[in-house]
Length: 250
Ligand SMILES: Nc1nc2c(ncn2[C@@H]2O[C@H](COP(=O)(O)OP(=O)(O)OP(=O)(O)O)[C@@H](O)[C@H]2O)c(=O)[nH]1
Ligand SMILES: [Mg+2]
View 1 (cartoon, rainbow, N blue to C red):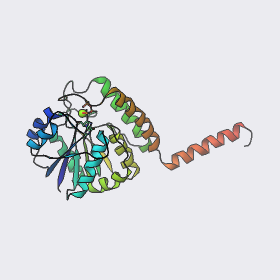
View 2: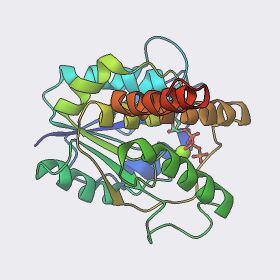
View 3: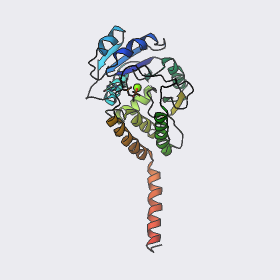
View 4: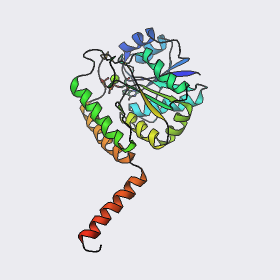
């Protein structure tokens, strides 16, 4: 199966070379989708031999990922793999993710940094680990299955998953991962997790405090959104029954 590696970038010049040096041989194409870098990322990516394009629709990682999904569907690749372009992701570890898709065991694979023994020391402070895990626990509730890292930077999709998800995605910024997670499950796609490594970042984070608050609100919203219609029906019957009982109608 042919595989496309997506690298979303915003001012990640220093991480491009290390990534190109550890690029495994199982990727047929590498696509850098840039969000308007001003530090020479685009030139560096071209020098590394990657295909580079500017994202459409506006600023933000979400638009970058959606642009990349559109481009992926125009190619004859079968699997789309996405990792952060900041040196945190171990490209070798995408092998296990791809394998699950190739065996037909999953349509979408998340690389979990949370339930993984491969994390580099100091790459994720305890408070961040707890925050990521709690967010994942919360978002797992409507789906009756534990997912541990819904905000992971590692994702792999088969063609069916991209075709199903792309028309449903609205995210512009960092809520793209949690939106993909909930919409994949609600669309009936098979979503699995595999443990992956995680390293300290090269360069500076683009995930500001304001964007973190915004993401938290999206986590709450996407948790509510994750419940199926029958959950709301049962809730309505229970609340209605209780109200009727309290008011002497029953
Ligand atoms: N195309 C595109 N990519 C972006 C944009 N903003 C961020 N990115 C990329 O998205 C990835 C995630 O951004 P990070 O800054 O690493 O955010 P994070 O992983 O939540 O935070 P860290 O823990 O600091 O790594 C990186 O590869 C960024 O370069 C954008 O507007 N457009
Ligand atoms: Mg990152």
